[in-house]
Length: 207
Image 1 (cartoon, rainbow, N blue to C red):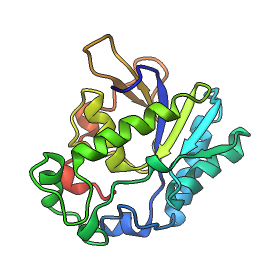
Image 2 (cartoon, rainbow, N blue to C red):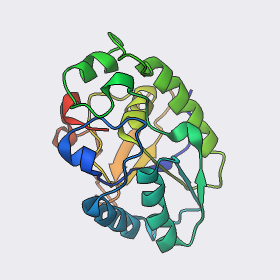
Image 3 (tube, rainbow, N blue to C red):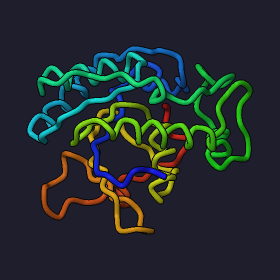
Image 4 (tube, rainbow, N blue to C red):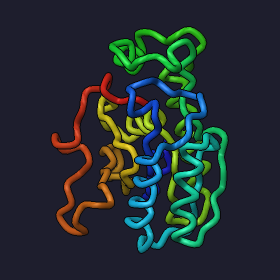
């Protein structure tokens, strides 16, 4: 069970493999120029949010994104290995395709990959560990890992999380889904991230 405590989540900035629509998984692909700019923009959005902790995946695309935020907020970055992206096995470096929908639904797992169920269990454990740091916590990690957290939050998993967009994740009442609000949204009346404008097919989401 995901600890019912509000936190910030930031998917890493763009990489060349994101731009080419390739599955990254555990391959350590660095940020490109667009990704670095996205990290700087995200840092500006988060600078006045009162963050007390930044916890990140050790993969460089997430770690470097977190370091940009850390430089602007004056915080240190704690690395947590279980926040790394899913292993996609034989699909790493390959174009995203319809297999991704089947993987999300638990109908198949690529050779040498983590199942979505295994990723979900790991993601929940990782998020709960991150949330033991002083709040508010910013978690900087990956797209597929966040889909697994969405499942635990009672939200659809076939929704793409854009690179470099900070989300404020708030638990609902017991039994109700969480609410996700992008940092760029107005402070009051902000649209939830699950509004139709933010939806995209699962196969359109390189991770």
